[in-house]
Image 1: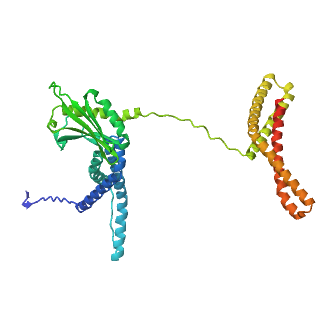
Image 2: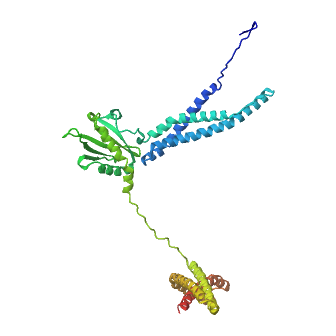
Image 3: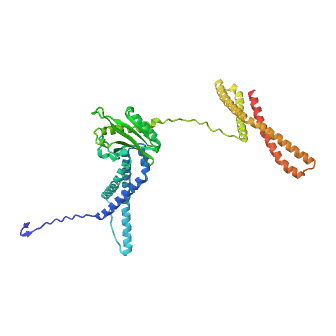
Length: 415
């Protein structure tokens, strides 16, 4: 630009700096490690996933569950990295200062954009590295195939002159009989031409399909169960020449539609029987029965005292209040008397046993006294042998007296 003989030159310098490309290798390594971890996670849970598929779990939901898990891991890892990065930078700065002996000043600024960038990178790495393992988990179940009505001939494999197509159903080996019965129900009885049951528990059902445009002709198909580990798969086998049969897709679609209802049909076949078990009877010893009798008798005496006091207050209270308390205490008294009567019936078998033991101990004690009077045993020996007998005799007599008191108590209340 010429101005008064002077030349003015304008220059604009644009510098574009690409930073962080050196971390691309680290991101690739992190993605591969994440993918390996997720693949190992799927392999560890393969048996559980198979079981969920057998029980009818939707593979799409399993796929979404694993992707959500990866999403959570990505968010947590990104946030943790954003928090740890300044600490690592500070530690490196201090280490350099200590090694070099000079002061190293570094200024780290973590802006909001850095948080968004770290989150985006963490989520992207986690989701991308988890997508393929999640797809593999979805394919564990045969129900994870693309939803369509047209079956391509390329999806049928050839084996022994037969075209084989795997139907989307998996059952446990213990449910093979249920699957066999269900297939016989959904297939028209007049179209079934043969049934085979093998020693390993698998089976095969042969049936015919009638082309709607060709009257008087029919094609033969076979449903054959295949055992793989603890799981039973179901294959549809047709002759190789029927591989490109235009109506085969309709047959397969009809079978798959009916097989989707197998879970509901299986549940309807189970009959649940609710058993009522008799409550376990409480085993009571003689001491327990006597203790309960004592407590019940004490409560009965307490209620009787309340009734006597109520009778003394009859003239000073209203008739309705008197009737209310009399009815209340009367019901409680009758209930406790019935309880005591039940306990007394349980005590009856012990009465005869106690009397026999008392008679035996008295005879033994009398024999010891006679031996002592005749001088066959010394005084010390008599005391030693008679003391346990006397204690046992007193204990049995005390228990027998309590039982007799219970009987007298009940007899007085009956009067």
